[in-house]
Length: 93
Image (cartoon, rainbow, N blue to C red; front, top):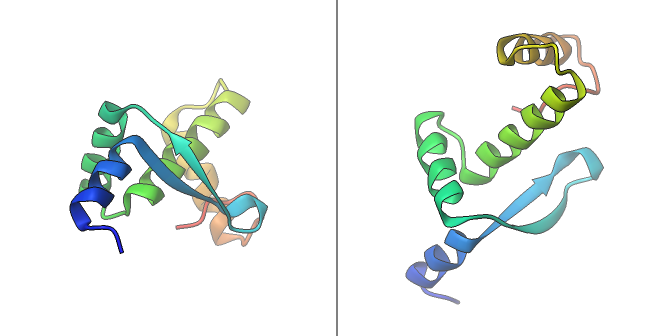
């Protein structure tokens, strides 16, 4: 089993993303070290794992591209309402 330090170095350059929208397949996504550090900080503040934070950012980014006239708050509200209604387009918590 790799050491925790080796795992941390690996995570600095690679991030495993669980893609829940296609049956929980896992992939490896290369990201910049600075972006990984931002995801780590944000995940701590938001009480999410680093992977959950990156997945949240990707989902919001995809929705923002698909709905360029909506604000971040409107997108989150739309997702919250879909989740309460049990809609398929809602983000996982």
